[in-house]
Amino acid sequence: MFSFGEFFEAQVQALRREQRYRRFRILGRRAGEFPRARLAEPDRPPRDVVVWCSNDYLGMSQHPTVLAAGHEALGRYGAGAGGTRNISGTHELIVALESELASLHRKSGALVFSSGYVANDTTLATLGRNLPGCTFFSDASNHASMIEGIRRSGAGCEVFAHNDPDSLHRLLARSDPATPRVVAFESLYSMDGDIAPIPALVATAKHHGALVFVDETHAVGVHGPEGAGLVAQAGLLEQVDIVQGGLGKGYGAVGGFVTANATLIDFLRSYAPGFIFTTALPPAVAASALASVRHLRQSLRERRTLFERVTAVRSALELAGLPLLNSESQILPLIVGDSAVCERVADRLIDVHGVYLQPINYPTVPRGSERFRITPTALHTDPMAEALLVALRAELLREDIVRAA
Image (cartoon, rainbow, N blue to C red; front, side, top):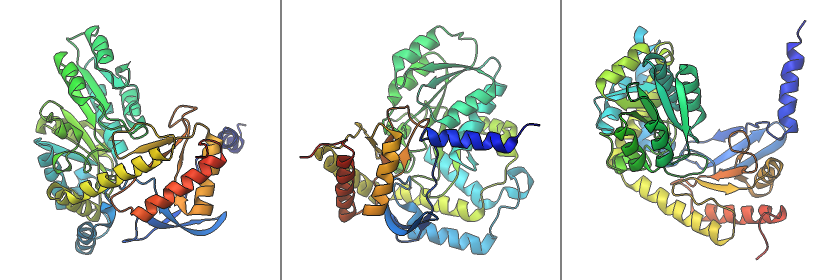
């Protein structure tokens, strides 16, 4: 008989041998103290650390308005939504959240999902499965959730070179204009921190009559007027058919969403299994997300503070000769190039310096480009930034990744 236990153990051990085994750091986040946290793991003593790899870019998970909204909703409505959206789960707060998100993107409809991954996967799979003869045109660096949704749809897929409108044009030009075509790309890529040439890609797609889907997970809340994202910053909300976003990054809560015209949203609401058959976001989560979206539509302070911090940290790391990619965003990738070195450096950063950075290894990034993904937030301080620089310089010097001054 087949030995399931031996199979699973062999697969895990293979990841360990290849230095690709994912270690999950156990963090004790404390309200009001982020980016400080308590690291408590079975194999090491508890350690206070400063987190430098969070997606909570604006620190909105700690904002008093967001916390108050979540507390109030928890006390009023209870912990859970009670069901799927179709069966008792469409509570008034999630409806208000969708209305706010539609308004944010100047669209007539919005749909909230349990995560950004599910929003991408479900929306793209539903489009591809239902549009007759659909072909996707997908950026080569698209997120796994987009790739998986396209794959599950069963539709055709052409991959264009990363951030390359000419490559997209060539592929679209040789496709059948009588069939539905969907161009899918991200506005801001989370591993390299680079920003797509949104106007050129949108213009190319529209020239060929394609529907445009843009993932703004790492941009909403952080970029654009009212935190509406990079598509809004480019003035192209009317040209982009579907805007996807996340509630767990710039907005500091959890969940994902898409905005589009009301008819397209109603189509997704009616045909998307990943929406229909899953429990709705709890009222307290929806209330926190709603408070965060509303606050960031009115306040510039958090975004200004974030980018002041990002500029300062980037300049200091570059001046120190650390191997940063040229990033235009709040994401600062520091290339190490070896998974074993990444793991060693990460351990010493924690044990010696109280700095938490998570190694990013293959297959999340290509082999030879293993890295740390440094994400300054609006709540990091100058002393924290100085400590990060000292720690990185010391440990990368030890590994001969940087040279002595």
